[in-house]
Amino acid sequence: MSGSLDALTGENLFRDPYPVYARLRREAPVSLFQETGEWFVTRWSDCQTIGVKDALFGPSDSSGRPEARVMGMPNVLSMSGPEHACLRQGIDENLSAEKVNGYIERLARPIVNRFIKSIRERGAADLTTELFEPISVRIIGDFVGFTEVDVDTLTRWFHSLNGGLQRPNDPDAWAACERARNEIDDVMRPIVERVTSKPDHSLTSHVVHGGMAEGKVRGFDEIMPTMRVIVLGGLQEPGHGAANATFGLLQDPAQAVALTVDPAGLAQRAYDEGLRWIAPIGVTPRLAREEFELAGTVIPKGASVAIVLASANRDESRFEDADRFVLDRPRKQHASFGYRPHFCSGHYLSRSIGKIALEEAFSSLPNLRLDPDREVVSKGWRFRGVMNLPAVWDA
Image (cartoon, rainbow, N blue to C red; front, side, top):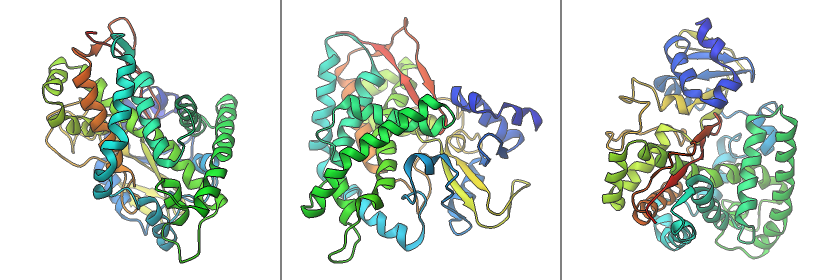
């Protein structure tokens, strides 16, 4: 056990958490991560146990967690009970499968095609930074109400918030996070004022008004912690999910060819497997309201617990050959969207954006393949993605 705990360091996790998680699942499936003071739960079955026991392992409202410092409190991830359910009414208003199916084509496909057109004739690009991230932030940015904010700024915002979460003791990372927080607040304030008096179809408007009694609205200070959660998770997940899936596909030319031949039929399966293989959001926090024994280890009352979604998705007892991206893997639910009642509100929108992005990329970029002369870079553990995905195609 000591060897596995020795490997559990922030540096190892940030570089590549998956070998660390594999050792923990084998040797110490419930382990205290000393650097953050949280108990890591790494096996599929144990993550399920914690995830469904919401009364016993509720959302963490600790002001000491990095999420509290970056997002502010209370936010949608820290709430429970009627207060959480009321807020989720506003967030979820326009995110059901039925609602998404009604607007996704006109929202997403023109944006996807515009960014593909901007790189198609070059025959080479970093598919993360020049295609999938811009697609993701533009679509979600417009959906939230950031229609006047440019792509570069939106991208910098989510990277900066991410840096504050993953490297809270790095002065440069925290300074960038603070700048992003202040800029987001400055942009959001007039948007909130506008939609308070004149509601529209943006997500911000739904958060201000949704679930509230007649004549009541949520104010700026009340919604901003939750809006920061949405900005970070929403802006980055569809883009990194698509990049992760594309990297998995391009590592195996036969799988890439299969998607090229049938993009409409296989793109959703590819995106979902990418979410399992590299979970964009790797950890979800909980708080132990009572002492609880799990996998032979006692988690103390009041302890901070991390459900390691990324590890659950690679658990060998759940997924055969779990470390490989497998396009035709038998369908099984993965853990990347978390557990109810905190199951990700935007899961269907994310999956729909990812499907369209993969469909169009593999349809429009002939003989798409990894660039042999440039390095693919992946990093992170609370949030992880293929940060640089250099590729070439026949222009």
